[in-house]
Image: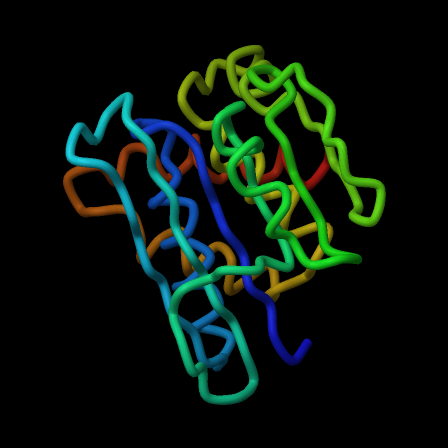
Length: 177
């Protein structure tokens, strides 16, 4: 892998920034150059949120992902807003539990995963972001499994360490889906 530019997008409260942070820390553990750039509206929870993650073997010129290799769309407004920006041959991962509309592009790989339903069915309500990150890991291999776990550990604040095992389980469910 030389470069991987990922745009996570959805509603505030879906864990968009957290998923990007886990990916960024995992890539850092892998020894890659990286940037993590969060973006969210003033209303935060319930508003729009996106996160640009750039991973490279080389120096990164800009932390902003304008034309992502991978778009993670966790809601319909995000799919509608960013679908056109994905590079031809890129990938769009959609939480099909929430986004019922089909991707209109035919020049990208589309992965529809019932991330919210998978999380809820396994007692992990609110962990759809980690289910999707697990699938993204499976599709791209952006780091080793060991470094993905280290990135997760680094991203969870000490006061929420009790959520580590649930996040691990959600990642595994995404990898297996």
